[in-house]
Length: 249
Image (cartoon, rainbow, N blue to C red; front, side, top):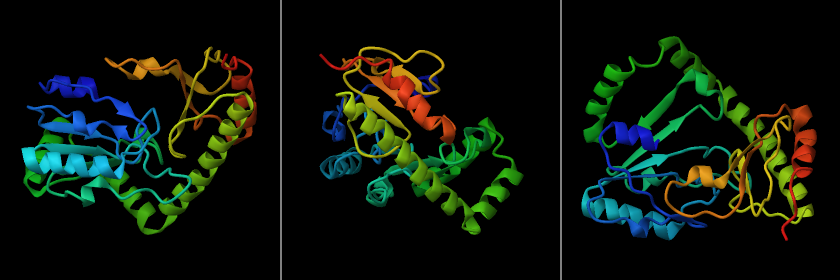
């Protein structure tokens, strides 16, 4: 995402993130656009707090700036219904972006934008010029999938499965003296503190937390993806991961 903004000629500044999401109160002067994941921040796992939602909407109204709301994996909230989109609070200042990359496949390359009225025409022109659009057959197939109710049933089934996987991982980590911060949501978990990285062969994707920060210091932790293993392999993958982790000192 950073490289994309830079290629378009923008200067990218980083916002610190804590348990309440991005620290939007730190937005400085001269900022035109802020990109956020209000429903579930990746990778730390927090949601943007109600207070900060109000602050960033006030910032956009006051400065004329835009908020890009990236609904990264908002379908996968496990303890309650997903929070309302920020776009509902400031439809004239929020660019809402979603896709089927997490629910179906990134290979489909299908996404959507909910735009302020003045941005619809220039965005449609840019999409047609730069990408040529999305194949019509794919769009029609997705439209039929949604209209039939099968898409919603598919997402509900995925939500149940990923909730089970996250709970399995969390319980195994707790037994190992490790914690999983953030809200029960998404397809990843942060393990903190963690001393080792899982070797190849565990079928659980692991990265260090430092990979996701350009400028701000981060604690020693691992980011674990639990969506990839087949259902029959999840228990073995979690057990293999546990065998590589040293308990906190």
